[in-house]
Length: 461
Image (cartoon, rainbow, N blue to C red; front, side, top):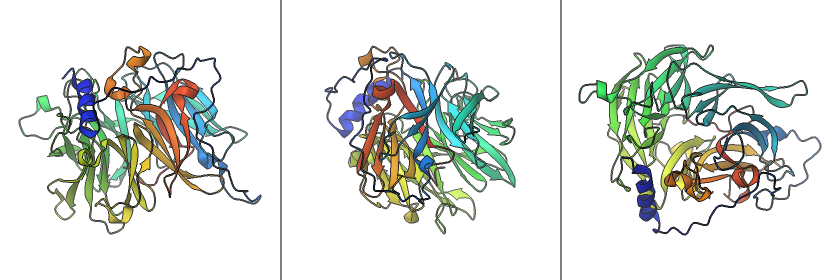
């Protein structure tokens, strides 16, 4: 398994495209050199009426930025202007430096009452609460980052808030479980959403179970409906010890796993499918929808549907409903949605596919692909100053290094799906209106993007 990722990249590119190594070397920018933003020409903004009620803060995003090992920069949380009609497009409005943790913070979430959290990919700060407030001038500022006590759980990924039998909880997936030294690592932390205290650690290590018993391993994606929660089994945090191919069903009455469901078919790159993100389609997302679980498999290039019977709380036979190997896409990652559409990001070649929300759990196209850049991942939705509906897509998988920069942390597969950019598009047409390359402009990689003071999407988990 220690050759897994480099072999995976070769297999992936040969599967989808042609086996070629003609990738141009990334541009290098001195820390002191002034470099213009990597943008397309901003779209001219129509005149906005003086009495417009447009919220100009709406187009500002909170981003997690990581230092890159061969560049002289530091990890930080920044607020960036992302309205392509603005003279400030791509500029950092506010920046808060972060300590030098053993791995970057990775994914931000707003709780239902507006508190901002981030998961982290290391052991030093696997879960944190970020103090994002307004100062006396009503300007946004960060008052601090508090690393939370996870009781030993490591490598945080996704967060979900959900009510179980009338009690609210914050659930967090930890791919490293109670120790990344465990080859079958993984746990789900159950937290009190007010105090941030750990209520329970849900753990079921495969090596400690009888054959056939349900396990939790490398959990990443998480979603829930009623008293059933589903988490994915993705890949060991060291990216060498193992890859998963299943989702785990957890009974929220007991906080115990009750079933594993395999979501794997042809293995287009010869490795387990690595289910990554998951969405439990439910009436709160689509009124009257037939409940079902949608699963993206990172190394399988597929999206699966698992039917759910509300009457007896049983899950049906999984069905592959999208095959990226035949459609020319790989590494599907996130599910996001607004009031009318659901969007799935595909890191290879860098596209966001869009589907009719009302047709879920089936995937019925609602328009042409939004063509981004390699590493299409997280996204937000907002409006420009003139009221134009926009989508911004973060094009970056993980901020590991690149051998072309003589970076010792290089993992070829990761480096080739790291464009370090945010592309901004017209939501209706998909037209690209602007691009900000954070590596070229700020000598940093971008880990995550979220709207300022509130979720930039309606549906996620």
